[in-house]
Length: 409
Image (cartoon, rainbow, N blue to C red; front, top):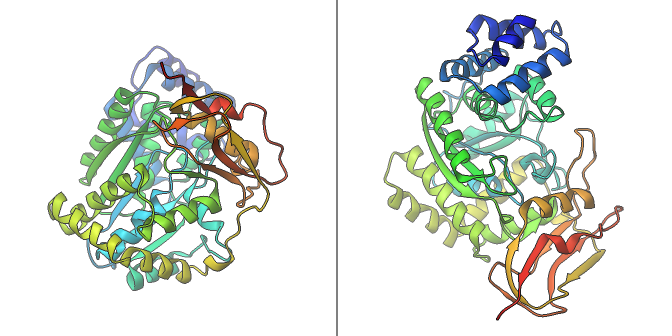
């Protein structure tokens, strides 16, 4: 193992056999954390060739189960977002896509750190099941065209074990490691085509648009390698997505958008994502697909599909709870709201109890943040910038740092 670490430290490419020895050995418990940490840091600093990335992705895929979705009629399109603050797109685009007769079959993850997870958001609906068996998963997909469940324990287990180590060794932000991690799970999940929403900005893994594009390019090449059509969208995550951050609050916002009651940047992004998925799934042009998606919104077909989906997975929306204890955060200066820091807002939601600092933390689904002003809005002293929905945790003293207000000349 030492010669493999040293080889990568010198920036030399590793063979498939060397990668298999290191990563397979770590999965089997033969390679200790400290040696794998050293190798991950060397990869972080020195990078990987395309061939190394293809080989590592394949090792991740082959380490566990691969779903066979061939019994489900139609072209199966999967969507992955590289994470962000207030990103509730799956809950919105899933029903829209499914109501346009494109199967929406997805395994989603939980949140860690300042980025929220779709599974946590769905589990804020009392009774909602995310632990479906493979048989239940496939049956529901056939019956209602839509299913979202947590990743099975044996889907790319090598990646799962490596990711847990990356998270605590400052090696998350490595483009080769992110690409292999994301694409191994997407390919093992069995979709025919994949849409990738690659975020950049303060609240994203990739701080710059250029890095997001680099990540998108390599994930597209991995898709080509496996003969899968992959489309990528590069989207901004400097500002939180939508007005709500926090699990139950985000379900409420998703419902409002599906009922066509709220039009904001999140609404526009969801139309774009859903249109791309329908275009891929029906093999039609983007304008034709968009026409169907807009019709599904205006007729509330998407909303009805969401209700059906929640009912199928035993959720009861009527019992959804939001904290009754609230605190308004008011402006202490006048001017124009020019920035809402997505990273700080995400960290604030974690402090309130809406996210995890460690994998073992228990989330409070009732807490969160509701933004009351949007970028470009005029602000007067005493105006409410946001409302905090509180649980057991105290409100940090730096909340106003989330907002940047510039004085007008």
